[in-house]
Length: 497
Ligand code: BG6
Image (tube, rainbow, N blue to C red; front, side, top):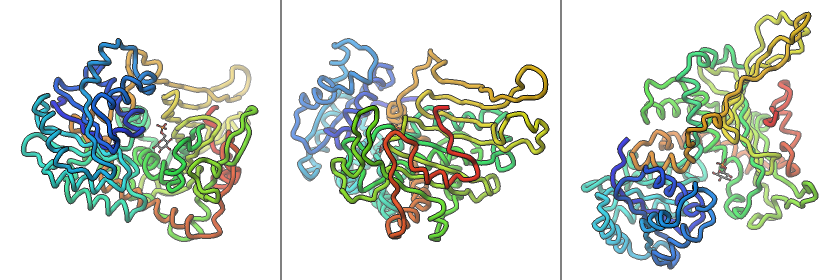
């Protein structure tokens, strides 16, 4: 694909994301020769920095760059740093946008970026709309000379109503085709590979339905806690932070119908349809029986004391915000009728892992009755991270008399493709936006459909005094009560097996 000459204007440029993700991703794109000939980054934020201070902060003295890039010589890094500039927009992003427009104009003239600009909003969400308005007031949404695009970071809304309001607000100033809503899980190779596994092979899709699939289980576990983000997280919780966006995006790729092509709208139309078929839980009994929330409590792992969630900085000591959420739900359509989906996401788990497990039904008629093979032992595991790959679990005959069956694995790991550099999610997503490909970005209707499903759960958790917030120790797979959700199926799969 062609990448036009362009400028990337990052709002929130002195924040963590810019140094941690965006600049290393841009550097890797530069090193991989993916950036266009003429390319400039303009960092914008509330800090009073010079171009040079900004370069030092995100390049010269940044530990993230060191950690995330392949070896490179100092002169090359300096050449990259020279592409970076900075503009202070005042404490409340309220300094005149006129200055910003002039700066963009001057940089464009000096560096030949062709009037093409991406505005990347990595600020608190409360500023998204006002920034869009201020840009529009300066004509910076107009595409008379060069295109203009707007990338919006998460969280996109706090509820269905706020997401709708935000969409409406942004649409006042930018067309939907100009807006790119980031969900960095869509930038992960293995998440995209869900589409290829399903639609580029003929051996999986015929089985991909209620006739052969018994249930689907998705685990997203992190070993870390809320780190330094207690203030943000306490108002968010696992359901908003991970489930509404990243996990429902994965769900939509697992359940969607085959699109007619691989274009952005062809794929996204099917994803919206998929999200709209999630059965929304409305009554308290259903919500009670199908949702579980919990919080990590103070614990000791290998002699190391781990703070409980309520003791984390920025967290209300009486907080009921969940750091663990497990949800059981159904998908009301022809393909998935009656197939239960179990999705859990949590912090402070034994390990960091994300995987989708397709549990197939047992054979209709079991002739190897005492074979040692359990029901539903056929599994397809899509390992999203780490050890990215596809694992198939099936039964083979144990050599010798009789028919004893043992489990065997047929596994593919991405690491075996040594010659391929797997792009980090932000690298891939930035490059796509630079090329105008929105396939891996969430569309307005997708985001709203996901909130539509999540809203009643959030309301129930918030408004119903009987909802328990269970406790679990750091380093265990969540509260034992979560096993009740999956009752009758044994346990949640242990991803380390
Ligand atoms: C972010 C969440 O969107 O995703 C974080 O806000 C979470 O709380 C992170 O830690 C997980 O991303 P990844 O790519 O490390 O799985």
